[in-house]
Length: 386
Image (cartoon, rainbow, N blue to C red; front, side, top):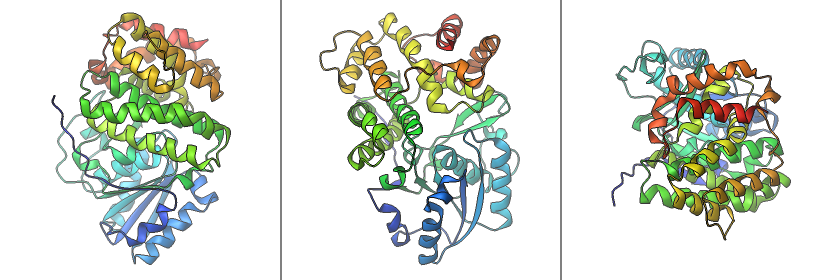
């Protein structure tokens, strides 16, 4: 039995936890608030954050340009603003895109050069980061990425969408308040919930999984199987919201103690080429074919059966039972008929996307329980196209 466990983030979980922010020891006196879209403003979450900072006597500057698939240009722009305003920490509020961006901005606010100088994979130069990033506070308003409990950040540069992170990019403090998730619409609740699910399923079947990561992964899978459909059907069902939020945070710990697999490499390539494709939707679209390949390979049958049981199929006895349980959950959440062609994706682009998956994030293929050939990767995309 061997594992490494490092989780330096303080996580405050529970309904109403945002109101506790001003009582915490914050890591600086002037924050760059990083967010995107309109929801955090529309529903008053940004205003509530600003009120908390006022109570804590912390100054702040707003950077609100983050896209659903965040881009390198905005990382550089946000970092330049942080430097100009002499911000000494960064707060990401919103979904995974805002929190991921806050981590990347925190790196570049403390370092020179270009963000891609430090990225591993694709055309990244993989240089060491000279200076520690600014401290990060993560406030999640969604349940999908688990980035409040891991060091990872995913940024797009052209056709390269690459995950990056190291021990210095864990949040200093994270707020997980399920009440902030009540306003997420059903479709996005489902997309985000499946993203959290796949962080845990990928972490569980991963070659580098351990007894420690398995504990978190199976519990996250169980909570999503139990409550995601209920959260999709009724966004005000706080028990369901809390369970999915908990699963999401657990999945972040899974990503810290294990890793994603090539399912994420494939989706990152898809949404790099087609940025309007929501990450969770992309994962849902390819998931049936992806896990069917693994089931038919019989490379990790016992773990596939365990995941099927965790999702609620208690009589599972074979690897394909997980695929069946997965499809049943997708049907219960109303997302079983998604297809790549819905997003204007051209079938002739699929070979380039398949190639990009290994070029940009080939490292995750090394974590797979099954050795995906180039032909199998393309086949997963083609069968998911419809």
